[in-house]
Length: 238
Image 1 (cartoon, rainbow, N blue to C red):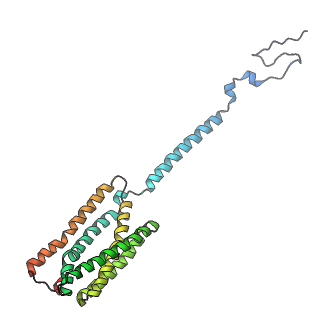
Image 2: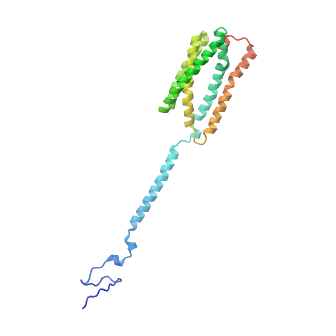
């Protein structure tokens, strides 16, 4: 008969000029069903995995960052600050000036000269120490400063018992280098050991200990005046 161009959408075949054609599944199944569900599931699983991985990474970063609030450096540095300023105020603010004054036959210029030696040496040592502390480890610079400090103690003892003005000058120069190295490095280490948002609290505590330790020298002077009166000797100062 005469070929027809009518299409039967609900059947399994179409009639056309070329006769019967093979079934086409695209006309039978809805287009949405042609998309593989595995692709959606895979993409959802990958997205969930990436999100979980991102959370794990962020948590690992937080876990890897130490709880600086409980760092051992904080109490150690606070204790060191108090002790070092007590010792410094005892011998540099009262006893040292009296000892130098007696060693140089009541010459006040000698006191100013030795004080300048310690201050200049501290200034000269502070500049390279700060740069090296940023380039290398803080604790390495503190170890160097500890060695210089131990040497300064030995030389100070020699100067005290020998009553040598030149030896005392070398000792004060070493003390200046010691303070120049340790003050810069320990301040940086103290800041690194404190968690963000808590630095003002601990820096305030350190400043309070600095002021409190600085009162040690005047207190020692009062005790020496009360016990020995106004007459001191170099041995008393030593």
